[in-house]
Length: 201
Image 1: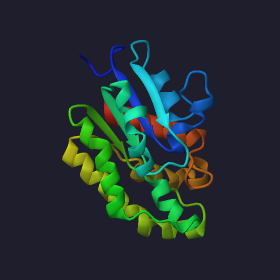
Image 2: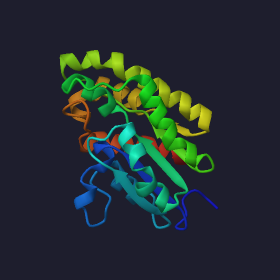
Image 3: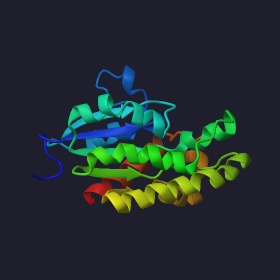
């Protein structure tokens, strides 16, 4: 069975970057990269489930994993989580250690070893001077995602690398005006990168 098949179910899990208003969208897709991908998949598109919730960290995803992800019996699961694990250290003095992040992330992946996994790097496009300092916290978490992708045989979408590369010419604020939440342009680039990485085009 090919990856894009109407008999398959794709679940996209994550935080606000994935959520994008999907809980008030009659189609349940939101208005970000998940919706763009659904349109790009064409007529033979699989069933698409957006399971993003704004503000969530890896541990929050783990707490709702059975209900929001596993219950859909997915064939493909795409995970994008981590920026809130970093951000809360700086705006709420509520850090998540790299070890705790990895522990929660493993909880997400363990029950899905037989499925196709897609891990998307959490990303930061610094638009404020202080955001450059967030790298101390975020970069080790991105390294965790890369290691887990290799360990679990997942496809790795290099979002942090590619979006920051694009920001050199386009400007960080063009892609994420607060450094975290993608603009329409940022979502388009993220969707194209996901599509290219996972489907090869």
